[in-house]
Structures are given as C-alpha cells and as structure tokens.
Amino acid sequence: MTVSERKKGRLSALSHALYVLTFSLLLVFAAVLQCADIEVFGVTPDICFALICAIGFILGERYGAIFGLCGGVLIWALGSGGVSLSLMLFALCGYLCGALPDVILRRNFLSYLVFTAMMGGIHLLFTLIYFIMLSESYEIWEAFGRIIIPEFILCVIFMTVAYGAVRLIYRLFKGKKKDSRI
Amino acid sequence: MKIFKNKFFIVILSCAVFLTILTATLSLLGQTDPIKDAINTLTLPFRYAADAVSEAIEGFTSYFKAIEEYKAENESLREENESLKAEIAEGEAAREENARLRDYIEMKQSYSSFKLTEALIIGREGEGYATFFTLNKGKRDGVEVGMTVMVKSGLVGSVCEAGDVWSRVRVLNEASASAGAYVQRSGEIGVLSGDIAYKGTGYCTLKYLPEDADVVEGDLIYTSGEGSVYPGGIYIGVVESVTLDGFSRTKSAKVRIAVEIDELKYVVVVTGYESGGEDK
Image (tube, rainbow over all chains, first blue to last red; front, side, top):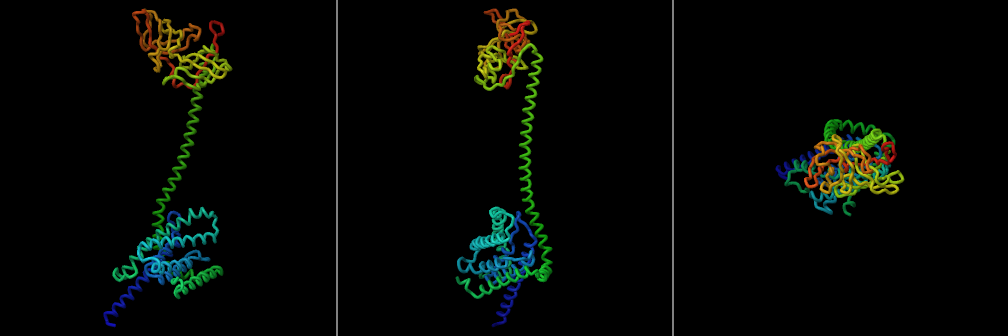
C-alpha cells in the first residue's frame, strides 16, 4: 500500500466517523425534540422514526438497525418510560429501509417514496397496537380520524424531509462521486 | 427471504427483543431512574435547542390553530346572528300586530256608530293590481254581500260575495265598482267609480259633477252615504286633476284613493251601522 493510498484510507475513515457522529447527534436531537411533545396540527410527529428510516435507506441496513436500537432506547429513556414498542419498531424499520431497496427496489428517491408509505404503514400498525394496548378513552374510529391517520400523514411528510437532510449531510462528507448508495 | 435469514438481522432482532424486555422489566421494577438520569443529563444541551425548535413549530402551527378557533367563533356568531334575526322577526311581527290592533281600536273610536269585524286577506285576484280579494270571514261572522270594507286610512271596497267562512271583496277602483261621494271642502256630490283607463294605478274617477262644480286639485273626497252601500263620512282619497266634458256638460275628477291596496293584509268589515238613529 502506498503512502497516498494510506492517506486516502485515513481520510475515508475520518469522514466516515464524522458522518456517523453527525447522524448520532442528529438522532439525539430528534429524540429530545420528539420527547419535548411538540405538536403539529394537534399530532406529535415521530421525528426519530423518520430519521432512522432515512439513515437506514441511505447508509444501509446495519446503520439503520443500530441507529434504530439507539433511537428506541433514547425515546424510552427520555419519554415516560414504561413498556415501549418503539425499540422493536425502530430497529425493524431501520433494518428494512436499508435491506429492502437492494432486494425489491432501487435506491433512489422514487423508491424511497414507496418506502415512506410502507414504513408509514408499519408505523400506523404499531400505533394501532399501542392504542389498543393503552385502550384510551377514544373510540377506535375516532382515534383513526384524530390520531392514527394524521400521524401516518405526518410520518410520511417527516420521512421525506429527513431523507433530504440525511442525504445532504451524507454527501457533504462522502462527496457526490464516491456516493455508491444514493 | 435472504434479508431475514442473515446473521446480522438475527443479532439485531435478538438485541431489540432483549432491550424491549429489559426496558419493560426495569420499568415494571421501577429501576429506570439511573439510566434515565444518565441519558437526560447527557442530552441536556440538546434540550435548549429542542425547546427553541419546539417553540418555532408551535408558533407556526398556532397560526393554523387560530384559524380553527376563528372558524368556530364564526360558526358560533353565525348561530347567534340567526337567533337574533329570528328574534327581530318576532319583534317585527309583534310590532306590526300591535300597530294593527291600535289602528283597529282607533277605528272603533272614530267610527263609534259602526259595528266592525276584522278580517285577514287570504287571496288576491286581478292582473298585477288586485281588484278583488278574499277574506277569512263570512256569513258565520256576520259578513254579508254589500257590506263596506275599509281600513284606518280609508275606504277599500265592498263585499260582493259571501260564503260561510269566506267572503269576496270588490275593491273601489274596480271598473264595476261605484260609490256615492262628495267633496269635503265644497260639498259637491258625484259618483265615484273605477275606470278601466286607470286599471292598476290606484286611481278612480269622480263623475257627474255639475259643470260649475267647485272642485280643485287637492280636494278631499269622502263617501256621501247615498246609494245604500257605503255609509257616509268614510275617507276615499284626494283629487289629482279635474276635467270638463264639453259634450255632456259635466265635470269629472281623477281621484287617487288613499289606501295602498297591494300592501293590505288585514281589513275591517262594517257589519252594521247606525244611520240617523236607525240600525242598518
């Protein structure tokens, strides 16, 4: 290995470490923001979930799953605690967002839009399970109108926004030409 | 599928299940405080930024929330407005009824020798300008053919048909109607009748006035009591113009009747009156 190749390898490892660190900080920020109970049109958006899906799609299934686990733990710790399904949901969706594009679709923005709908659907399912577990005072159909469907829509919107942000940061560190995934 | 059968997925899934069970167990045992404290302390710097972002988002969405509030307020004001409109309409109806009853009482006082019965107009006939109308009172209420129909402002016409619970009135300006009338100022006597030429205009003609009759524009016309249909002294209208017919050597006057026929809702039927100490 020549000196020049070693230098390139070190730079690549550095940029890799930098963007992983940036995404980690972003994930912590998203978790804190989500636990601050922000409401958009009366619904709390799952910002962490959107970010994990975007990370999984752009960085791959390994990052998606690990960030998912970390995000799940963060949400559990920063939130009210208790029994949380977020950890399973985040890890699973982070993994799927990274693994599925190589199997069923290509890794581009259009296929990401398909994934936003798919992951939004999974999120909706988990919200429904969570809702049934908690058996809130709402009727199930009322809950669909007031919580579940608005959450799904917000989830899809935030996933699209998160995709833009993650892609931008990823390109800043990796450069456009070296970008093999997106 | 290959993606679910690789080592990494199994490890991750196991970790996720393990962590879920661990966090749930810790929560149930109430042992979450050390972990929560540590993570909350580490993420403290992010909270300031998160608060700022949260406030910005809330500020943005509160604008739309305000629109929802305005919509609700608008809806409530609209309902209040409808309710007030209904109250105003009720008030207006009460005011009209009050005015009508006051007119009726005043008429009873002014025409103390008349027996009066109030009736509601339930139908109108005529082309554009009603010259016949139907009342909701008939023979059962003492209404007979030939009886005078009037309102506070003046003479309306006479009953031309009467059923048990209804009657039909011929308005004064109908071509076939006629009444004995006199000029209040000079006492000149003539016959007031409807004129086909004035159909739909609210005018009548006072005919058969002598060639030298003292009639001028602005003279007030009253019923004379001649002809046994109308009692005397009921106001009819005002003279608008006078013409002399050189051939028949008589004068005739164009009279504008005082009553706005189209605006009438209620009328009073004179079911009887005293004439020179004699009941009619």
